[in-house]
Image (tube, rainbow, N blue to C red; front, side, top):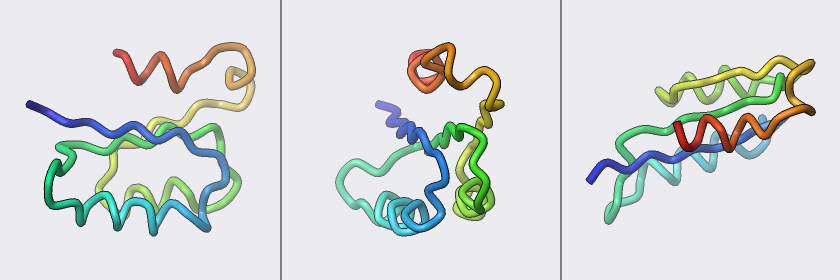
Length: 76
């Protein structure tokens, strides 16, 4: 079984590092991949996610309000 964790973010610099560190430490059902779907953060959210080896998808601000992109990427 492959486990993927999908995390939608927007300016989550203060929290994303701790969340990713804890996800990586999980012993029972360790994720095979962590995907961060970012809504054009203005802080270092994406850089932090990449430093943990996460796949990142950045949604441009102009598209963010129209469609539930996080949900779409989550089921693709």
